[in-house]
Length: 147
Image 1 (cartoon, rainbow, N blue to C red):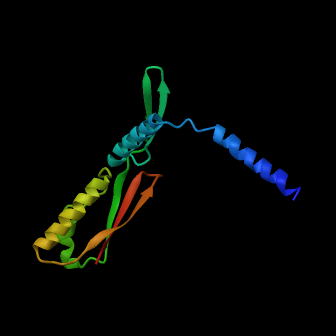
Image 2 (cartoon, rainbow, N blue to C red):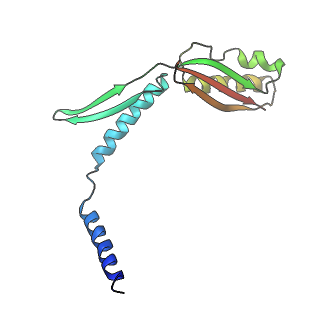
Image 3 (cartoon, helix red, strand yellow):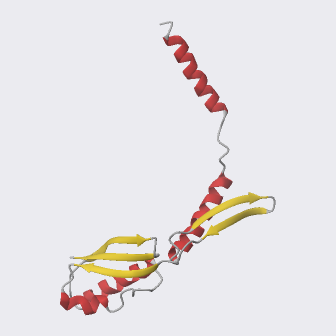
């Protein structure tokens, strides 16, 4: 019992000290981090997948430092399991190699392809299977599964 009491007192004192040292995280920190996240998302949408945004408060306001990194381009679009007779319908406006990468571009292409197939009465489904980034040559390979 005598050995347990000092250990318990040491544990309780650590908790008391930890409660005294509260974090200085504030709502302003949340707003700054969210603004940095939104800037980074905007760069991602425009093909800068290695973008990094940091903020530094100073006397006049916040300064956001953007390191946009490399601009990524489509390298290849692969469609797995697609019947050859449907290729012209789906691949007519696929993202081309060398085009600036944008997830919005991939989404639009998939939606347009789905609409084209539905207009022809074709009930196949396809979905995004994977995205492979190659940071060395700033390229993206998109794989779509066709069912």
